[in-house]
Structures are given as structure tokens and as C-alpha cells.
Amino acid sequence: MKAIVQPTSHLQGEINALSSKNYTTRYLLIGALANGTSTIYYPAHSEDSDAMRRCVRDLGAIIEEDDEKIVITGFGKNPKHVNELNVGNAGAVLRFLMSTAAFCPDVTFVNTYPESLGKRPHDDLIDTLQQMGVEVQHNNGRLPITIKGGQPRGGKLTVSGNVSSQFLSSLLFMTPLLEEDSEIEVLHDLKSKIIVGQTLEVLAQAGIVVHASEDLMHYRIPGGQSYQAKEYVIQGDYPGSAAILAAAAVTNSDVRVLRLEENSKQGEKACVDVLRAMGVNLTHDNGVVHVRGNQRLVAGEFDGDHFTDAVLAMVAAAVFAEGTSRFYNVENLRYKECDRITDYLNELRKAGADVEERQSEIIVHGKPEGVEGGVEINAHFDHRVIMALTVVGLRSKQGLTIRDAHHVAKSYPQYFDHLRSIGAQVELVSES
Ligand SMILES: O=C(O)C1=C[C@@H](OP(=O)(O)O)[C@@H](O)[C@H](O)C1
Ligand SMILES: C=C(OP(=O)(O)O)C(=O)O
Image 1 (tube, rainbow, N blue to C red):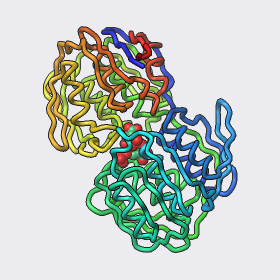
Image 2 (image 1 turned 90 degrees about the vertical axis):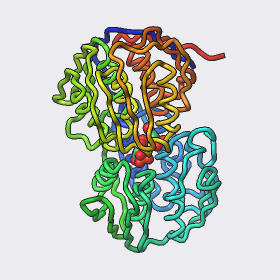
Image 3 (image 1 turned 180 degrees about the vertical axis):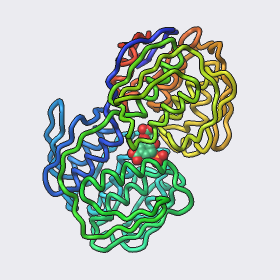
């Protein structure tokens, strides 16, 4: 599918934020790891959340659902002995389930997205699983990956955190089920540290005890625990909504996004502060972010690691700001669905933006007068590239055509419908 994005100067209306992908994957996992029946209200429906749903079902969870909720009966620490799991293009789902798979004798995670997830590295988690006595066969740290588990051991473990926090989260979900106590030391740095707070939050809700050091670099996890079956309510999703808010910020707009809790633990809620710092007129009260955009933004400097999945949308806003913006501490964007620094900046340049890259930085020389556009954009299999380039297309002179825009469904299948509902001129056509 191609998205043809036309210049649009005015956006107006109200959007109910999509449900959080990252909470949905977590609650599905802890529902599956519980013995008993949990209920998850307002789950996300996207390719990634569907991947988690499919895989935990393959592993033996029983799932019933209606429009409002998922009712899931878990398998505890005794998953069904499947031979194969297909996580689609979902990094978090793969990494979280690699540890769960250690309770199975022989599971292969297949490689269905060789150009995207197939290129991402998982060595850091493989190393830790090996410390636990789990045999792992892999393709140079990449998919396909076969986990030959059975009786993983706890004890003293280390995991590197400088590529992804998902490896640590994965271990935090699984180690409470081991017989022995575990101690995890995070080596090097811990990127996307904030999202580990979401992991600890849902673990506590399920009655799991984890002793975490204040800096989130050391953990003591008593063994022999079990997940309680509970009721969970999924909040609105900041990473996806960040793109809607950026679209409102770069146009003349009066847009309200609902279901965005002020006290959320999602790091990407910082996008509200980032836009505010860029001079965007907005308020955030009672779960509603209200943007009254006037097309005028000013540049700023931001630590992007605090809002990793919203960086691309914020960079798209910065493309139209007065002055030079800098998004630093973002090297791990290179290890996502595509290289979100080199690949993304190449597409932005095609659209007419003036951007520079460093190993761990994105620098944007803003163009308040707008960019030229009039070109075709390669999506690089990346939903966040698609969403961010759409924002740029709205403020371009000649619009943008985004190829393979269907990959937006990885996290936000209703993105274009939502944008169109507030007046964005976007046409979706099938690609021959
Ligand atoms: O734990 C999670 O659910 C996620 C962690 C982040 O990844 P990294 O830790 O690799 O930055 C984030 O980008 C991803 O969308 C979801
Ligand atoms: C990086 C992302 O997801 P994942 O790592 O789970 O593939 C994302 O949603 O932007």
C-alpha cells in the first residue's frame, strides 16, 4: 500500500489514542505466565500485539476475546512444547519470549522479516541464556534462533543493556519462575531505561517481587514465585500518539488526543514536554493533550533516550522549527526496525529536510518555510518512519508518497484513518 500525503495546512478534531502496544505485550505475557485466568481490558490490536497473542496461544495459553477485552488463562512455567514460533517483526515479542522459551525443550523462532527483525542483534540475551545453562543456536546473534531449554538455572547473571532494554525486561519476566533466586547485574549502560519501569510496574501488579537498585542496574529476584491472575486496563499509547501530536504541531490546528494519562510510566509521554519546549501551544489535563498549532516551532536539544519510540516524530516536528535541534543519546535507534538514524535521515533528505547524523545524534537544521517534497519515500519496514514522514508530507509543498505504508500496522493500523478524521489529506492506494 502507498500513502499519498498531500500538503494540509489545517487539522481539527478529537482522537481517542490507540491502546498502548508496550503494555499490551506485557500484560499478555504475564497473563500467559500466570496460573489462572486474567482479563485485559482495551488491548491494542496491531501486528505486534497480535504476534504476542498468537505466540502465547501457541505456547498453550487459552484466549477468548471480544471487542473490549481479552480473557487469558495462562500456562505458568509449563508452556506447551512447540517446535516453532513466529513473532512477525516484533522485537520486544521475540526478546521477551526467548526467555520463556527456555522452559521448552526445543523451540525455533523463525525469520519472517529478514530485512528488518532478521537484521537485529540478540547476542546480549543469548549470552545470558547461556549463563543459565540454556543452549542457543543462532545465526550470528540473529534469527533464526533455536532455544534448547528445559531446566534454566538462576543464580548470578549479567546482561548488557547498551543495545536494548528488552533483554533485561525479558529476564525480569522469567527469573521469578526459576527455583533458585537470581541476581542480575546490567553491564555497560542501560538504554531505554525508562521502559524497564513499565516492566517493574506490571510485575508488581501480578504480585511478583523484584528488588531493583535505584539506578536500575542491579536486581535481586527471589525464585519460586508465581504470577497471580489479575484484571488489567491498558492505557493510551504515547509513542503512536506522538506522531499525531507532531502533525498538529506543524500545522494550523486545534486537535485533542484523549486517553493520554499524565502520570503514565511511558517515557514517550515526554513528547508533550518536547513539543512544549519547541514553543507549541498545548495543554495536558485529565488525560487530554490539546494542541493549538500555529506552524511556528523553535529548535531545542533533547536526550532522545528518554522517549525512544517518539524520537522520529519529534525530529519530524523539528524539521520545521526555527534554528538547529539536536537529539542526542539515540544510538540504539540504529538497532530498531531499520537504522532509524541513517535510513530515516536519508528519507528526510529526499523530502527536502536539512539533517545531519552522528553515531548517536540526529541534528536538524529547521526550515520554517517548509520542505519541497514531491518524492517517493522508502518505508524501510518501519512504522515509525512511515508515521514521521507523513508528518513531514503534510507540511511539504508538493506532498510525499510513502511506499509500503501498510507497515504502519506494526503498531498503529488506524493511523491514517485517525489523521484523515482530523482533516489530513492522505490517500491510500494499493501498489502494483
Ligand atoms: O520493552 C519494550 O516493550 C520496548 C522497548 C524499547 O526498545 P529498546 O529497549 O530496544 O530501546 C522500545 O523501543 C520498543 O518499542 C518496546
Ligand atoms: C522498536 C519498536 O518495537 P520493537 O523493538 O518491539 O520491534 C517500536 O515499536 O518502535
